Image 1: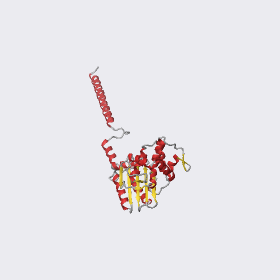
Image 2 (image 1 turned 90 degrees about the vertical axis):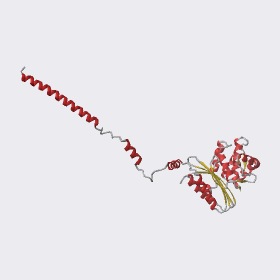
Image 3 (image 1 turned 45 degrees about the vertical axis):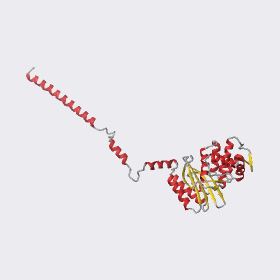
Length: 310
């Protein structure tokens, strides 16, 4: 082999090695660039920016709700009552003071807690309100087996029918017979044990707080079977005198009530008011003098607006 041939072979070997090295370097650089390029199908994540957008999008001071407002909004969506004691007390005070006669009002929770009141212990002639008490003790007699609910009682009505009628239609013959049969003295003694202090079943005197208390007994089912409790409340829900409290409360709530009035001098109404979510509150109104059923209805509208946070 000549010297020229050897030099040619050496140049070929060196050139091949350089080519391989350059190609390898190019591949490394190309691979590196591929790894650093973003995937066109995946958006880059920037946590700080995302959080910032979430907190500011469609957000302005006028649109921001406080925790209390959110809670109230949720309550209204569920049909819950908002029991604002100060607002209810102000409504009761304003209503009772602007009238020309005497008024006693009790707003009570089912557990017996008084939310608002005006002269709640004042004693009035109860008129037909006494039938609430008679019916309560009458149902206890049925539940304890002392009497037969299906016996013929008076005017073609069974005892059980009379218990319904004395509330639903304010039937007096049914109530008067049972009032004597159960015994006024006995009922007075039992009412005292229940903490009902202002009621005299002999003279048919009672107060707004006492009638609220007897309705609270019924709502809680104290002393009553579920069947008797349900029957009692259903009679009150369907009672026929509807020009006072249940005239003011709208169909957004359910009203269970009993009225009592004596000529044009006194008008009383006590009601259990129930929300669509099942919340209950008792409103008892006793009046004497320059009050009308329309006046009582106006108080109911004000109370409802507070309960439903309008």
